[in-house]
Length: 330
Image (cartoon, rainbow, N blue to C red):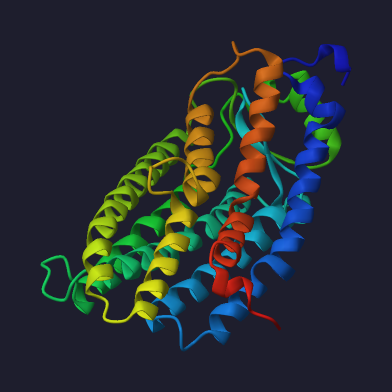
């Protein structure tokens, strides 16, 4: 396709933005798989005496899920948004195997879904650690299992929705003649097209459910965080020894930097996972064709970079926010 015929900022995508996004995903995924996550796992396993057993299990499960997330989403898939078109462009090995679009969407959605239960378990476990034993908010094992089962069910429905409703629109043949989509097809990857600019024809059902579930998760995390802050003060004061107080404070600070900080500013997983994901879903559901091309191209790359940094920030905060973790040597 002719560069002069491209609209919506795709001339910037063609010149360098897509290559930057794809290379960033490849490099960061390899770094996270072989360095960023193994080192925190080593710290967690080595410091068995200094960390609560349940919290340790939560961190191990979360880092293992993040490794799978990196392998599938950023190494084998490597997606790029194609705003204002409702869809994604996929250029990794997974998208060059000739698989049906619905299957590719199901595989891509799996690591995002897999990441939620261990992270929710970690949040719940951290919350319970700071809740006094006589508090009505102290959950029994039966309630924890019920909540985990509900979470798994809801997240599994997301995968089913991606597979069932991840279909091309009825006018897909006409849309593929657009110069922007012709350019993407010539790159050799897979176009996961849901519709032209505007509301997707079939995929809107799973988008609505996914956005609703994500926003509920953000709200729940904020509410749990507020409860943990209140419980933290009482538990911190009740700690018998100064060493126990120090360990509790360090664990508390690390965890809140990984999700958000005490002033509710954007940090950690809220900034690098939830917010880019919700923003992407909103743009896939709406018409952004009136946005300036430079703004659209910059927005697409910025959302992708933020999303790609989620694993790295989780590990970096765990290592560098806690002075005890920085002193660990192999």
